[in-house]
Amino acid sequence: MGKRIVIALGGNALGNNLPEQMVAVKQTARAIVDLIQEGHQVVIAHGNGPQVGMIQKAMTELTRSDPDKYIPCPLSVCVAMSQGYIGYDLQNGLREEMLDRGISKGVATVLTQVEVDPDDPAFRCPTKPIGAFMTREEAERMVAERGYDVIEDAGRGYRRVVASPRPQSIVEIESIRDMVEAGLVVVACGGGGIPVFKTEGHHLKGAAAVIDKDFASCTLAQQLDADCLIILTAVEKVAVHFGKPEQKWLDRLTPDQARIYMGEGHFAPGSMLPKVQAAVQFAESKPGRTALITLLEKAKDGIAGRTGTVISL
Ligand code: ADP
Ligand code: MG
Image (cartoon, helix red, strand yellow):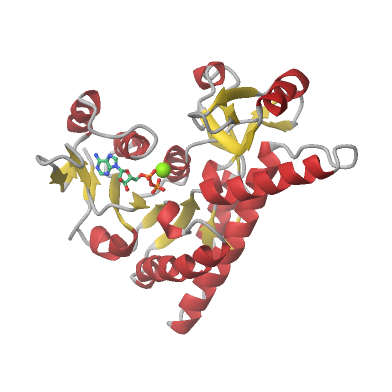
């Protein structure tokens, strides 16, 4: 029977620039349509690191070119632009691959806002570098004029840093659910979603922050009552002693075992650690929910139980 699956696409699913993305999306679409063809309901979330970086850099150059004419573009707007650009490519890639296989299904991208907590401890120590490098003078001006947090990045210049708070809830969840139930293939929560705060009345204010796409995908999967969260990345399985001679690939991982390995520092922060944390959170959120971490090309084999690391109770 078909499952409801939330797929989180990693950086390798989209490439690092425009031509790479065009090529990568073809392969990504094949992997996703393999699951659709087997009768699964698929919802797609994705990262946006290189894309939002490119947009942010372009917008910064625009402001630099004529500061009286162009005001700086908020990060939340850059994330929205990246969702639109990536959604455009994914919609077309999926459309083409489905039509080639005789599948007739609509694909839609939802520009997704994700609520974050203004009291999230992450806001007290922003750690995520974003955007172009700045000179010391530019950095000092940004701190004074815009209240940015900046760090010196390993001698290469200064960069703005923002917080990476945990996602609380997805603003457009009802629309996403309706579209999934109507049989559409939905792309949502791109780049972890556009982070927003609730303010007075019904107003939502964009936050200068980025949400980890692995955590946002977990929230999406929970809020959609998905059966499975599949995190597709650049490795086929999760390992302990990763990259060391005693490295061991894991076929299965329980939340308790994962916590022991996390405590021992087996998963790199910022890459594998958020995936394992998101997988554990999803697996523990309701009986029967499973998470799978595997290689993009192995999605079909993974869901059939032939490869990948399965995280379940
Ligand atoms: P994505 O863009 O898919 O989020 P990341 O680079 O953030 O990809 O995270 C995946 C990477 O994490 C893998 O390609 C691998 O190099 C690295 N990694 C770190 N620790 C581990 C581990 N214990 N097991 C497997 N991969 C690991
Ligand atoms: Mg990552």
